[in-house]
Image 1 (tube, rainbow, N blue to C red):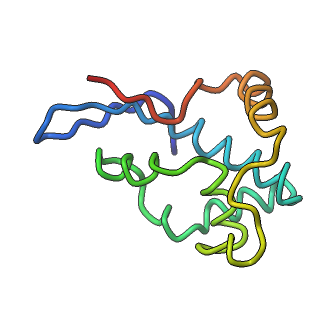
Image 2: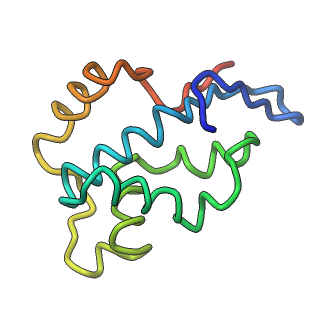
Image 3: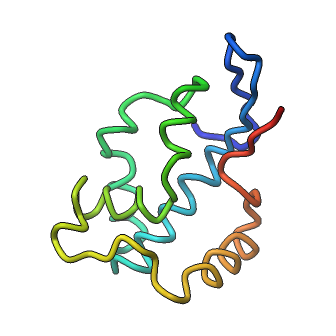
Length: 119
């Protein structure tokens, strides 16, 4: 089960990331429902069957891999494939996306960010 507040440490540099896994996947689920017009159950199934989630995000390098793209990007990859932008799906989130995301985070009482980088 994904939870918020997991601290992942790079052993070579001692850099840390707080991985908010529940928040990460919950935002992706909301995006799939809102912007890909899928039901909540469909969104959960899509997330659970996503090839890159076949193992848990539990290392610093895992977090770096997922944090280099937005939740919107991951949601579009899950629904439309790794090269969704070649299929005519805009790589940029819709104009109202930031407002939607802020409202969704507040409504669901999620962490402010899926990945928090610490020194």
